[in-house]
Length: 385
Ligand SMILES: Cc1cc2nc3c(=O)[nH]c(=O)nc-3n(C[C@H](O)[C@H](O)[C@H](O)COP(=O)(O)OP(=O)(O)OC[C@H]3O[C@@H](n4cnc5c(N)ncnc54)[C@H](O)[C@@H]3O)c2cc1C
Image 1: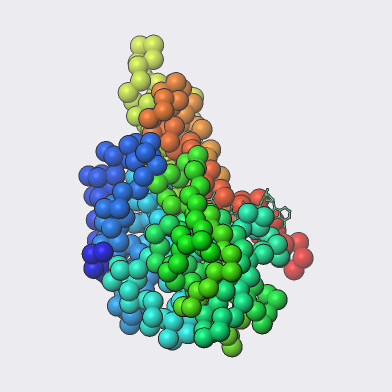
Image 2: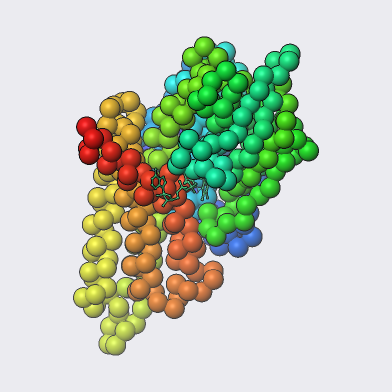
């Protein structure tokens, strides 16, 4: 894979991403979506732009950008295809895990390769019977003689999980009844003891969504994030902690969808002849566009506020990033519906952009936590201070 360094200047990164979206993504996204394919060359381009290594601190060879620096680039990428923004997300989560919770040896082992664009990561909590409810996770890891771990269990919805180089995976590791975050190198994936299936999806196509089954899978290179002393049993705390980064990424996906829904609504309003004029001459179209503009501005402001809190490691980071992801994703679903009312039948043709956005937008309501589960979590400290 090409060596990569994100431009240290966030506006240069944004401009490069926006140009890539205009030149390459928008002309081809309908084909990629129909074929359920995120071409390897496109993923490599995202890596070469520096999107996967941007959060790696300069001391480990990265650009050392913050989450707020990435918001404009993630939003621009999502105006092309949210699958691209989703594809770079797990590696960013891995960087945050290593920086916040890894041992120095673990940082040295993984961060320089991510910064150079040579390594991609996956992030795996979800199991067939457990998403929000971490108490129901069943994957376990025993100690392997000679080092490493032996894994048993099922994982589901592992983004990038077919070709990533390393998986940060929640499992109950021998020695603690609470889950740990296991760093699992991908060697052995696709063998009889670590089987792999791809999940076919409604939208958010092109992103590898893997289901794994481990059957006494021996992983000599696997270890606990943070080491046994600090990391054993700390996986829930560590992995939920970095989801504030992921929730801003998902909120940016939703914001990019709102941007495109507004663009579609404007195209319809100005280009669709109705009576003696165009659709936009009519009050109902003006109200739809005005409401899209207003809600987009509100979501964008909330996303910026959340990103700043995440970078500052502020006490409000969890609440703001969760609120941003929930409000942005519900707004994305709403925005596509509003724009589709103006486009009517044209939004129902299979290759139409609004048809794809209608399938893509719900992913943002589920990824990084189901919205209703997150709303209940947001309510808890207020109801029970
Ligand atoms: C396209 C896609 C990509 C994904 N990528 C990844 C990935 O890379 N890595 C990963 O680990 N996961 C991934 N996920 C999984 C995603 O994070 C989970 O789907 C999400 O966390 C919700 O979990 P769940 O689907 O099991 O639903 P649940 O959490 O089981 O929710 C089902 C229902 O139960 C409700 N509920 C949940 N908790 C409670 C509660 N305590 N009390 C009452 N009601 C409750 C919810 O509100 C919801 O209505 C992905 C999912 C999708 C669709």
